[in-house]
Image (tube, rainbow, N blue to C red; front, side, top):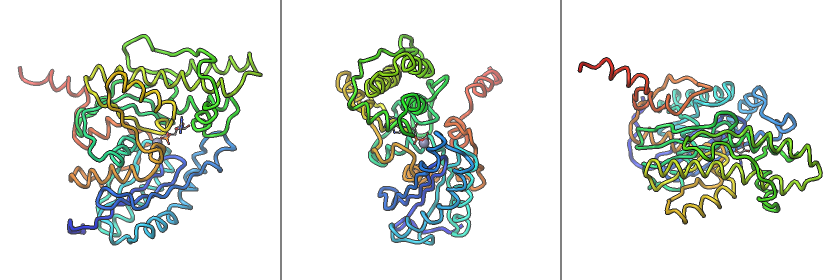
Length: 363
Ligand code: KG4
Ligand code: ZN
């Protein structure tokens, strides 16, 4: 392995290819994003109303090397200037992940630099450190993307606890499916968010699952079905009002739980992550509540809420900088969880293993 001196400048490369966005970013000295290139495949998938895995992996393959070229040129460096490289290892579409990881491993091998596999979900959390470099745990996290809606408590960088999550659809999925019902464009989140600006959020009262209990679980299938039947019964209803009311229900559901989680963990800090955290109403209402109840809320910048490679580079840099568990032989994992990654990185045992260990320990 090439031991590059720690002298400045240190260029660190990140690759994101977990779904339908191809991303390449370069960080300078772990702080400055000197390139953040993203190619969205939306035009190839929107006619299918969703991502087609085979098309996604082929498009990543076609354009990743071009994006690498553009990013290196923008950053004013070459492969030989890199000190490390990170790529998303999961969760995501297996073929798409493979393209990014195989490319990253090949560059790492050819340059004699370390490769860092990054969990996409943790990448979303790390997007916050790009804009808030001084942010420190403990805090609770609302992770809301197209495939995930979870609440975590990050006690320290080495310790994350999952407090709850969705039992059916993810919040982003609820936005996407709701938009389909309302015949809005794909992806649905930004479309609903936009048209809601002209709508009345109190026009329809939608059901809000689990709002009166103390769990940290979510369910969005009820609100989605309620929208479907409402629009079937009232086909002439103003779409802006329906969208605004639907968005309001989703936002209320999310915020009720994350503020409850912060209270339970006795922390003042609430961190948001994932594509849905770009939602303007979520941001607006979170701000109102945080002022009213005295919490600090941290959102990623709008450009780094949805999938991007800067967040992957930032997470990879964190491991590089702290000398954490390099896994050059790590394999892609379509259903990788945060808990699994933390176990591998910091050798935490599962709750079952921990209780087993306790039971077996000499008394
Ligand atoms: O994090 P992300 O880019 O990809 C995943 O990892 O899933 O999240 C994509 C999701 C989509 O469901 C999209 O509709 C939603 O985030 N989204 C939004 C907004 N922008 C993106 N949802 C609500 N409001 C938005 N402004
Ligand atoms: Zn994502």
